[in-house]
Image (cartoon, rainbow, N blue to C red; front, side, top):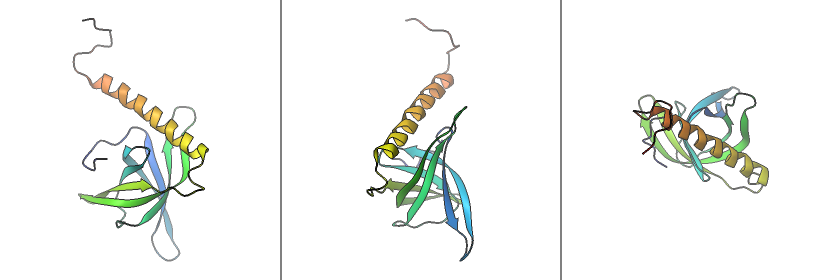
Amino acid sequence: MDLTDRQPLPDLTARFRYKKSLFRKEMVETRLFGLDQYGCILKTDKVFEPGDTIQFDLVMKMPFENISAEGLEGLVVEVRKHCSNFFYSLDFLNTAEKTDADMRGKLERIQEVLARKQTLKSRREQPGTTGATQTA
Protein backbone atom coordinates (compact mmCIF):
# COMPACT_ATOMS: atom_id res chain seq x y z
CA MET A 1 0.00 0.00 0.00
CA ASP A 2 1.09 3.54 -0.70
CA LEU A 3 1.75 5.85 2.26
CA THR A 4 1.55 8.92 0.01
CA ASP A 5 -2.21 8.68 -0.65
CA ARG A 6 -3.68 11.82 0.91
CA GLN A 7 -7.40 11.02 0.54
CA PRO A 8 -9.00 9.17 3.46
CA LEU A 9 -11.25 6.24 2.73
CA PRO A 10 -14.93 7.24 2.89
CA ASP A 11 -16.76 6.60 6.17
CA LEU A 12 -14.10 4.25 7.56
CA THR A 13 -12.40 4.82 10.89
CA ALA A 14 -10.15 2.94 13.29
CA ARG A 15 -10.57 3.14 17.06
CA PHE A 16 -7.87 2.24 19.55
CA ARG A 17 -6.80 2.99 23.10
CA TYR A 18 -3.57 4.94 23.52
CA LYS A 19 -1.69 4.90 26.83
CA LYS A 20 -1.16 8.51 27.97
CA SER A 21 0.37 7.76 31.34
CA LEU A 22 0.63 4.96 33.87
CA PHE A 23 -3.08 5.06 34.78
CA ARG A 24 -4.65 6.95 31.88
CA LYS A 25 -5.68 5.74 28.45
CA GLU A 26 -7.24 7.79 25.70
CA MET A 27 -9.73 6.50 23.11
CA VAL A 28 -8.47 7.58 19.68
CA GLU A 29 -10.53 7.58 16.50
CA THR A 30 -8.63 8.08 13.25
CA ARG A 31 -9.26 7.88 9.50
CA LEU A 32 -7.93 5.12 7.28
CA PHE A 33 -6.06 5.84 4.05
CA GLY A 34 -5.70 2.28 2.77
CA LEU A 35 -7.16 -1.15 3.42
CA ASP A 36 -6.66 -4.61 1.96
CA GLN A 37 -6.80 -8.18 3.24
CA TYR A 38 -3.24 -7.93 4.60
CA GLY A 39 -3.36 -4.63 6.48
CA CYS A 40 -4.23 -0.96 6.51
CA ILE A 41 -2.83 2.58 6.60
CA LEU A 42 -3.96 5.01 9.26
CA LYS A 43 -3.04 8.57 10.15
CA THR A 44 -2.76 9.89 13.70
CA ASP A 45 -0.73 12.26 15.84
CA LYS A 46 0.07 9.44 18.30
CA VAL A 47 3.63 8.10 18.18
CA PHE A 48 4.40 4.46 17.40
CA GLU A 49 7.59 2.77 16.26
CA PRO A 50 8.07 0.02 13.67
CA GLY A 51 7.58 -3.28 15.48
CA ASP A 52 4.87 -1.94 17.82
CA THR A 53 1.49 -3.67 17.80
CA ILE A 54 -1.82 -1.81 17.89
CA GLN A 55 -5.12 -3.38 18.90
CA PHE A 56 -7.98 -1.61 17.15
CA ASP A 57 -11.50 -1.81 15.77
CA LEU A 58 -12.55 -0.85 12.25
CA VAL A 59 -15.91 0.90 11.89
CA MET A 60 -17.64 1.59 8.56
CA LYS A 61 -20.33 4.21 9.10
CA MET A 62 -23.58 3.25 7.37
CA PRO A 63 -27.03 4.92 7.29
CA PHE A 64 -28.83 2.28 9.37
CA GLU A 65 -26.29 0.04 11.07
CA ASN A 66 -22.52 0.39 11.11
CA ILE A 67 -20.29 -2.49 10.01
CA SER A 68 -17.50 -3.16 12.48
CA ALA A 69 -14.63 -5.56 12.93
CA GLU A 70 -13.52 -5.57 16.56
CA GLY A 71 -10.33 -6.83 18.11
CA LEU A 72 -7.99 -6.51 15.15
CA GLU A 73 -4.28 -6.43 15.83
CA GLY A 74 -1.77 -4.73 13.56
CA LEU A 75 2.02 -4.66 13.45
CA VAL A 76 3.51 -1.26 12.58
CA VAL A 77 5.80 -1.93 9.58
CA GLU A 78 6.32 1.57 8.17
CA VAL A 79 6.04 5.14 9.44
CA ARG A 80 5.95 8.36 7.44
CA LYS A 81 5.71 11.80 9.06
CA HIS A 82 3.27 14.30 7.54
CA CYS A 83 3.16 17.72 9.26
CA SER A 84 2.26 17.01 12.89
CA ASN A 85 0.81 13.57 12.08
CA PHE A 86 2.15 10.19 11.08
CA PHE A 87 1.00 7.68 8.47
CA TYR A 88 1.35 4.12 9.77
CA SER A 89 1.32 1.03 7.59
CA LEU A 90 -0.02 -1.88 9.64
CA ASP A 91 0.07 -5.56 8.78
CA PHE A 92 -2.76 -7.59 10.30
CA LEU A 93 -1.42 -10.19 12.72
CA ASN A 94 -2.73 -13.68 12.10
CA THR A 95 -3.34 -15.16 15.51
CA ALA A 96 -5.60 -18.18 15.77
CA GLU A 97 -8.39 -16.40 17.64
CA LYS A 98 -8.38 -13.35 15.33
CA THR A 99 -8.58 -15.15 11.98
CA ASP A 100 -11.92 -16.85 12.48
CA ALA A 101 -14.41 -16.91 9.62
CA ASP A 102 -16.61 -14.25 11.23
CA MET A 103 -13.73 -11.72 11.41
CA ARG A 104 -12.65 -12.42 7.83
CA GLY A 105 -16.27 -12.05 6.75
CA LYS A 106 -16.56 -8.66 8.43
CA LEU A 107 -13.33 -7.43 6.85
CA GLU A 108 -14.46 -8.65 3.42
CA ARG A 109 -17.84 -6.93 3.87
CA ILE A 110 -16.13 -3.65 4.80
CA GLN A 111 -13.89 -3.95 1.72
CA GLU A 112 -16.89 -4.64 -0.56
CA VAL A 113 -18.86 -1.65 0.73
CA LEU A 114 -15.75 0.52 0.54
CA ALA A 115 -15.16 -0.46 -3.11
CA ARG A 116 -18.77 0.45 -3.97
CA LYS A 117 -18.51 3.81 -2.19
CA GLN A 118 -15.26 4.64 -3.99
CA THR A 119 -16.79 3.70 -7.35
CA LEU A 120 -19.80 5.93 -6.72
CA LYS A 121 -17.55 8.78 -5.57
CA SER A 122 -15.36 8.53 -8.69
CA ARG A 123 -18.47 8.58 -10.92
CA ARG A 124 -19.71 11.76 -9.23
CA GLU A 125 -16.31 13.42 -9.64
CA GLN A 126 -15.93 12.65 -13.37
CA PRO A 127 -16.10 15.87 -15.42
CA GLY A 128 -18.70 16.13 -18.12
CA THR A 129 -21.23 13.71 -16.65
CA THR A 130 -24.63 15.10 -15.85
CA GLY A 131 -26.16 12.01 -14.34
CA ALA A 132 -27.72 10.91 -17.65
CA THR A 133 -26.40 7.85 -19.43
CA GLN A 134 -24.09 8.80 -22.26
CA THR A 135 -23.98 6.73 -25.43
CA ALA A 136 -20.98 6.29 -27.65
